[in-house]
Structure formats: structure tokens, C-alpha cells
Length: 275
Image 1 (cartoon, helix red, strand yellow):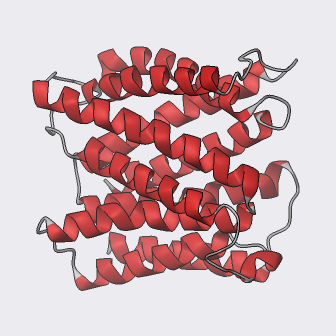
Image 2 (cartoon, one colour):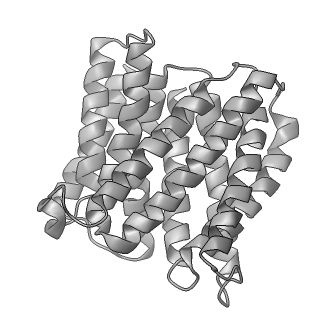
């Protein structure tokens, strides 16, 4: 469970990184739609490898999860367009982790005290690792914060709904989720009159982002079916660390002291949860 949740965080963060790179040349709405289409290919390839059963109730949860995912992505990109990434990213990630944590605790999950300490450190890590020097100044009235809160709530319920299925459902819930999210995002792009044609040389990057996003969904569903939602969702929400580290390696961006402190908190949090 621990390894699968961390793999979900790693691949979600990598998908955001490559999706962000592609969005520099191609409209964000087009990147999301095209990457979702690419992800369907991986889902079909993985289907024979993971035992899956369809349940009528799970199809309903999957459809709702897809709509929540589409809303979360749409709101996130709108927030990034109007606010500072150093504020929008941690707000979204922390809120997205908070929803399943409160849901899990209200549903009777009781992680060990050391694991709860690890969860607290992971929450702190998400905020610190997404912070830039200028974004230490924070105000609820700052542009994009409201949209980031909405995005975090939607993504948080995506985590809850995907986990709220039978343990042997496997990838069937992701089939239902993509069946809802892809048409919703296509409609969003049409309403905004966004051209879906990628910029020259961007299609490969978009495809990589879509494949990584679907891989993250698969890892998350398998982790959520095998462990406590309270723990799995928080570990998955460490994905900003993956994005930041990829920027460090590929774009040669530098980490500030606050971000390195966030990385340290993430490592300690994972160790506490593992113990």
C-alpha cells in the first residue's frame, strides 16, 4: 500500500510537470483533453493485468469520480491562470488531502498515533515544498485562492469516490471515471471554443502527461483498495514534491531552504507512516 501510494504521488507529480510544460505552447484545456485520450490507451493495456469486476454501484461511484476529476482539473487550470502557482498548488494539494482524511476519520478509520504524526508532517511537506520565496505572503483574498479551494475539494472527493468501491473492482471504476470525465472536458473545451490541435512538437509531451496521469490513477486505486484512505490520500497528495524535483533535474531550477525543509518533512512523514 505504501509503495503504491508513493508511486501514485510520483506519477501524479510527473504528469503535472509534463502537462505544465505542454501548456506553455498549447492551450491548457486542449492539453487536458488530449492527455485524457492518451490515458485511455494505458487503461486498456493494463486491463488484462489487473483482475477487475464490474459492480453496478461502483459504476455510479466511478461516474461521479470522473465528474469530480474534470471539475478539479478545470478549476485548477483556471486558478493557475489567475493566481500564483506557489499559492495555488499547496492550497489545492492540502485541501485535496484534507477531504479524504476527514472522511476516513468520520468513517471510523483509526491510524496509529505515529502514522497520524506522519500525516501531519506530510501536510506540512505539501505546503512547504510548493512554496516559493515570494509566496510566503498569503491572503485569502489573493487571486485564484477561491478557485484553488474548489479544485482541492473536487479532487478530494475524487479520492474518496475512487476508494469507495469494492476491493475486487480493480480498474472498472477508472473505466467509468474516464467515461464521465472525457466528455465533460470536451464540452468544457467546446464552450470555451478552445482549439484541440496541439502546437508543433507538443503532442509527445502531452501523451506522456496522459500516460503518467492514468498510471497514477491506477496506482491510487490499487493503494486505496489495500489500505486506509486516511493514509493513502495524504501520501498521494505529496505529488507537488515530484513536480518540484523534476523541475530541479530537468529545468535546472533551484530549491530554496523552505522547499528543502518540505522535502525533509515528506521523508520523515513517510518513515513515520511506514513504521
